[in-house]
Length: 112
Image 1 (cartoon, rainbow, N blue to C red):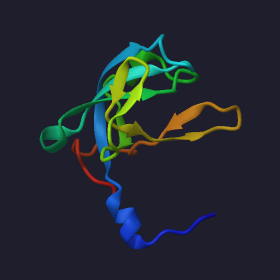
Image 2: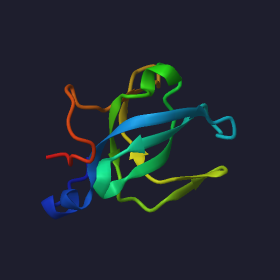
Image 3: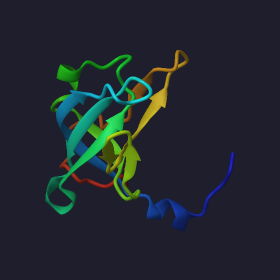
């Protein structure tokens, strides 16, 4: 495992946002959804591609809070520009389990 300095960690903007829209993303190489996530007034709404189709249904994601990196540069993924990176953990079967707060916090709250 590589170690980092505290100053490296401080550069990463991990914020909470609420999923407000979910669409299928058939153009993606691996099964994925297109998400729109509300990070509050300071950051606004951002788009992301997320490979979370194994255990999440579109209708279950709307209204759910997620943790995402919001200060990466946009990344072109097929026909869309992903504006944040939704975080999660791989299970043994390869499915991704979303990282999220266990109770509601304000959209845009930064990981402490």
